[in-house]
Image 1 (tube, one colour):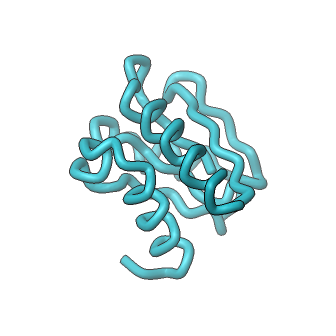
Image 2 (cartoon, one colour):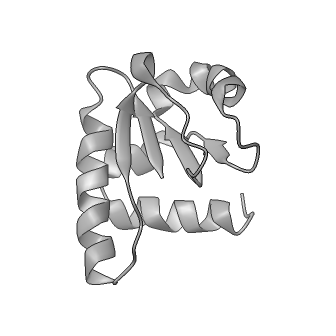
Length: 101
């Protein structure tokens, strides 16, 4: 899983940190990274790419750079980011992986 954010993307880092804590407690083995949009690189093994709401306009640009067309690329609602609640983000990701909107 990869979070793509702006240079000042503290929200992504804080949510990723909280997610790691929650996942560790649940014995889930997810690899979570954060990456600045200006330095975005594709990793064909990434399952899902989450784009910060403030750079949602970059969605198509990211899609064009991703080689694995099975990678889920989405921008979660601002309310999920604003909550700083890693569990809410985990729930959102699980819905996306299951194909739910």
